[in-house]
Image (cartoon, rainbow, N blue to C red):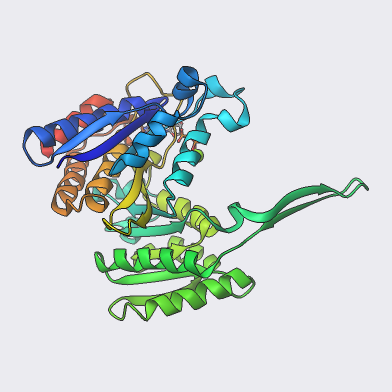
Length: 363
Ligand code: ATP
Ligand code: MG
């Protein structure tokens, strides 16, 4: 039976980089390597223009029915004045919420050809391959109360609340442990148990889950130390699991060790279905819609293609194919091909289509 992909290119460069993914899918199907059926929808500003909503009900239903959603990017200055609940980003938030995507996977991989683009020394960064697993649906982003109160004397009080329950910590740590088993069998769990009750519970639950994975090396690390160690000696890490807020910060820091925003993929996963065991999933580049370069054909498609490689790996268990796509990316970089965002030393650069075509050819 065909495996169902639902493509949501979105706005700006989202539509340009998604075309390169479509070419890869069409080629894989034509070779009989995959049997994907794919349908596309609108999300973000383009959906607002068409339907007055950041995503239509019809497209939400298609996303819910798909085996994987491949998402481009949303937003742009054109929609700055759109009502808050209809703004382009609301489409992505709705998808995350309705698909119940609680686990955000952010790899930080250093392609050897780009090791000198990092702010760190080549020897610290070469061969870097870490995976940050961020809890995405709980914590201080959503906890109640969440208020700003006018105290009346020219002063205000703002309150955010960090809330975590056992089941939320348990399931995200299990995702990290399972992933570690497909990698180097090492997990660091980051929290601030020295000052936060939610950190105390986080570590208690994480340590308990770790007992079910005697083959995985488990380490507790304080989140501030994790930030320092990421910059000091990033290669000591394999998988790092942490909460929503620390994950936001640590994954951005880890990502930038590797160079450009145009290189970074991500995956967001839900819970396995009780019957089929399949997880809902959404794959997207870390970068946004880049309105400053949209329409000029220069966007780097690598983050988008690497996100598709994550879909092959995590939604369809096509591990060898995912490895090949990632190797194809690495190989065109080794050949010296560069889009503008990753160009070094006045080298000639190529556009989106040329980069996409070169990667497909390697594949
Ligand atoms: P968002 O709020 O959606 O996260 P942002 O303000 O963080 O957006 P991006 O849209 O990610 O910004 O762009 C930041 C900068 O990086 C811009 O100058 C953009 O042109 C550049 N950039 C982002 N993605 C790419 C890409 N794939 N290829 C080339 N340049 C990119
Ligand atoms: Mg941003």
